[in-house]
Amino acid sequence: MKKTQNEVMLITPRFSKTLKKAKIEFDKIHHFLVRDPVVKETMFTSSSTVYSILRTVNLFFSFVVFIPIIGSIWNFNLPHFLGYLLSAFGVYLTWIFEWVTKSTVLEEIRTVTIIQISLHSVFGLWYHFYDTFEIYDFIIHFTGGIWLSFLIYPLVMGSELVWTKTKMSFFFLKIFVITISIVMTIGVFWEIGEFISDLIFRGYPGYRLAQEDSLFDTMVDFIVDFIGSLTGIYIFWNTLKRLNKTRDMDSLLERIGSALKDYVNAS
Image (tube, rainbow, N blue to C red; front, side):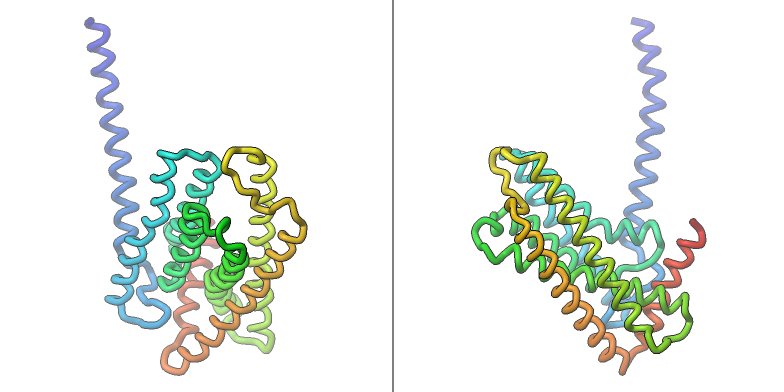
């Protein structure tokens, strides 16, 4: 009995230290999520109040992606459950990116991120929109191309503004090529992921073949991704032009790019 009590006495301080470390890490994450990062503006306004409100709203609605995760526990399907987890990670990856790089993802783009991933995870998989509506996969790939362009374009442009200092004649062409290349590369990895998923979970009860055993489906996905990316770049570029008439958007993006440069130099 004495030995057991001694073991308990040794374990208790260790457990207490672990809890303290966990609390410290949790406090760091909480502090990051509620505080204003370096750039305290959104795309459409420089008001820090609007920024804080939109950031809080985004954090609140990000929990939507946990609906299928929790719901699938009672009707467990391994491939779908892994897909839900991956989708949730994708939503919070925007905050992780900020936390690691000390840069900023514009809050309007974070809103689009939450909507896009929810359309795939919650509606597409959980509510079976992919099975119910044949065109739904087409729509998700198209809006996915737009979303990724929205996400990547400001980061690329901000970085270019910092590194090149001036807008050369081919400045926007360079940003266009880099952005669409990154979007299509992500599209390639997505299709590879679907291919591997189909190989592993083929025959699993309730599993829907992502690529439908069809090269045609894969090629259509690539084409739609490309069209969506072109559309997203066009929308974002024209939006920046309009906003630049009343506000220095280059300065906003340059500050985002500067934070990325500092992260790269410090690595």
